[in-house]
Image (cartoon, rainbow, N blue to C red; front, side, top):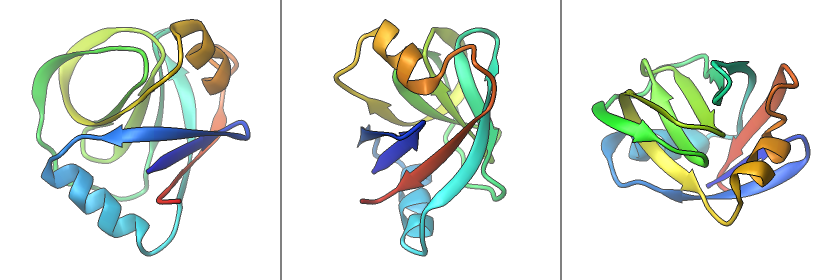
Length: 117
Protein backbone atom coordinates (compact mmCIF):
# COMPACT_ATOMS: atom_id res chain seq x y z
CA UNK A 1 0.00 0.00 0.00
CA UNK A 2 1.13 3.56 -0.65
CA UNK A 3 0.32 7.00 0.69
CA UNK A 4 0.98 10.02 -1.50
CA UNK A 5 1.29 13.44 0.16
CA UNK A 6 2.57 16.59 -1.55
CA UNK A 7 3.70 14.51 -4.53
CA UNK A 8 5.70 12.14 -2.30
CA UNK A 9 4.70 8.48 -2.71
CA UNK A 10 5.53 6.63 0.51
CA UNK A 11 5.46 2.85 0.84
CA UNK A 12 3.79 1.32 3.90
CA UNK A 13 4.53 -1.95 5.62
CA UNK A 14 1.05 -3.15 6.57
CA UNK A 15 -0.08 -4.56 9.91
CA UNK A 16 -2.06 -7.79 9.87
CA UNK A 17 -5.58 -7.25 11.19
CA UNK A 18 -9.21 -7.07 9.96
CA UNK A 19 -9.00 -3.28 9.58
CA UNK A 20 -6.15 -3.54 7.09
CA UNK A 21 -7.97 -6.33 5.20
CA UNK A 22 -11.09 -4.14 4.94
CA UNK A 23 -9.05 -1.14 3.73
CA UNK A 24 -7.30 -3.25 1.08
CA UNK A 25 -10.69 -4.52 -0.15
CA UNK A 26 -11.96 -0.92 -0.35
CA UNK A 27 -8.83 0.15 -2.27
CA UNK A 28 -9.50 -2.54 -4.90
CA UNK A 29 -12.40 -0.27 -5.97
CA UNK A 30 -10.00 2.64 -6.46
CA UNK A 31 -7.77 5.08 -4.62
CA UNK A 32 -9.02 6.82 -1.48
CA UNK A 33 -8.39 10.56 -1.38
CA UNK A 34 -8.94 12.71 1.70
CA UNK A 35 -7.76 15.95 3.30
CA UNK A 36 -5.55 15.74 6.39
CA UNK A 37 -4.83 18.48 8.89
CA UNK A 38 -2.23 18.93 11.60
CA UNK A 39 -3.37 18.06 15.09
CA UNK A 40 -1.53 18.35 18.39
CA UNK A 41 1.83 19.03 16.76
CA UNK A 42 2.42 15.29 16.20
CA UNK A 43 0.07 14.10 13.44
CA UNK A 44 -1.88 14.71 10.25
CA UNK A 45 -5.44 13.42 10.54
CA UNK A 46 -8.36 13.31 8.12
CA UNK A 47 -11.73 11.68 7.60
CA UNK A 48 -11.99 8.82 5.11
CA UNK A 49 -15.68 9.42 4.42
CA UNK A 50 -16.45 5.79 5.33
CA UNK A 51 -15.84 3.49 8.28
CA UNK A 52 -13.59 0.49 8.77
CA UNK A 53 -13.72 -2.11 11.56
CA UNK A 54 -11.53 -1.19 14.53
CA UNK A 55 -9.07 -3.30 16.53
CA UNK A 56 -8.13 -0.69 19.11
CA UNK A 57 -5.42 -1.26 21.66
CA UNK A 58 -3.56 1.18 23.88
CA UNK A 59 -0.37 1.97 21.97
CA UNK A 60 2.27 4.65 21.75
CA UNK A 61 2.31 5.74 18.13
CA UNK A 62 5.66 6.87 16.71
CA UNK A 63 6.69 8.91 13.68
CA UNK A 64 5.79 6.97 10.54
CA UNK A 65 2.87 5.07 12.07
CA UNK A 66 -0.31 4.93 10.00
CA UNK A 67 -3.25 4.62 12.38
CA UNK A 68 -7.03 4.21 12.15
CA UNK A 69 -8.81 6.44 14.66
CA UNK A 70 -12.52 6.20 15.51
CA UNK A 71 -12.99 3.81 12.58
CA UNK A 72 -13.23 6.59 10.01
CA UNK A 73 -10.08 8.69 10.26
CA UNK A 74 -6.52 7.99 9.13
CA UNK A 75 -3.70 9.46 11.19
CA UNK A 76 -0.18 9.87 9.81
CA UNK A 77 2.21 10.39 12.71
CA UNK A 78 5.26 12.62 12.58
CA UNK A 79 5.58 12.67 16.38
CA UNK A 80 4.57 10.53 19.36
CA UNK A 81 1.24 10.01 21.15
CA UNK A 82 -0.32 7.32 23.31
CA UNK A 83 -3.99 6.44 22.86
CA UNK A 84 -6.33 3.61 21.94
CA UNK A 85 -5.74 3.16 18.20
CA UNK A 86 -5.85 0.56 15.44
CA UNK A 87 -2.48 0.20 13.75
CA UNK A 88 -2.68 -0.01 9.95
CA UNK A 89 1.00 0.11 9.12
CA UNK A 90 4.28 1.97 9.15
CA UNK A 91 6.02 4.32 6.72
CA UNK A 92 9.59 3.01 6.76
CA UNK A 93 12.95 4.43 5.80
CA UNK A 94 12.61 8.06 6.88
CA UNK A 95 13.91 10.02 9.85
CA UNK A 96 11.53 12.10 11.96
CA UNK A 97 12.71 15.30 10.27
CA UNK A 98 12.27 13.75 6.81
CA UNK A 99 8.74 12.61 7.70
CA UNK A 100 7.84 16.07 8.97
CA UNK A 101 8.99 17.55 5.68
CA UNK A 102 7.32 14.89 3.49
CA UNK A 103 4.00 15.18 5.36
CA UNK A 104 4.04 18.98 5.47
CA UNK A 105 4.01 19.04 9.28
CA UNK A 106 2.75 22.35 10.62
CA UNK A 107 1.82 23.61 7.16
CA UNK A 108 -1.96 23.09 7.34
CA UNK A 109 -4.08 20.92 5.09
CA UNK A 110 -2.70 18.38 2.64
CA UNK A 111 -4.38 16.06 0.19
CA UNK A 112 -3.61 12.40 0.88
CA UNK A 113 -4.06 9.57 -1.59
CA UNK A 114 -4.04 5.96 -0.39
CA UNK A 115 -3.49 3.40 -3.13
CA UNK A 116 -2.48 -0.19 -3.75
CA UNK A 117 0.04 0.73 -6.44
